Image (cartoon, rainbow, N blue to C red):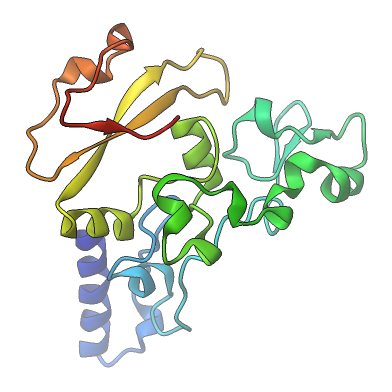
Length: 217
């Protein structure tokens, strides 16, 4: 998908230039916060055509963004799950006080690479990436610090003859902004597709085959 989006962006820029127009006039295809990370198309999909080159600089929750739910609940980002990231409610506290003092909003400003684990802990880009989107990592693996949805990671593992897949271990409760939990199963690159039922809530106790290893959850 990322390769396709990058090809579309480059084609659009080429078409605009062929018409004698500046690249700024091209349709802009930009990666979301939870897509990609440091693959061969990083600058293409993070930069605006004709603008300065950009790249992923880490989660900006509570730094440049804020989320306020309809009941006044304040989070560092609208996407974050409510329960672990509620810094307060604007009905009870001033927004400035919540922004400055709530630990749940300050985690990006204060965190270090110490919270990284799994592949992300030893990654070349660990210092700046910090495991990508906090919403994605927490809602996938139950905590921040390890992000399987990464182009650089997948490409690195492929070169080493490995790949990862996610297996559902806990289903979401079904309330607003909730999340379940998956575990990462690592296996040889040429391993066949896993049976569909292994990701089903009814198969939460399934055991990986002896040829696989499970990353700690």
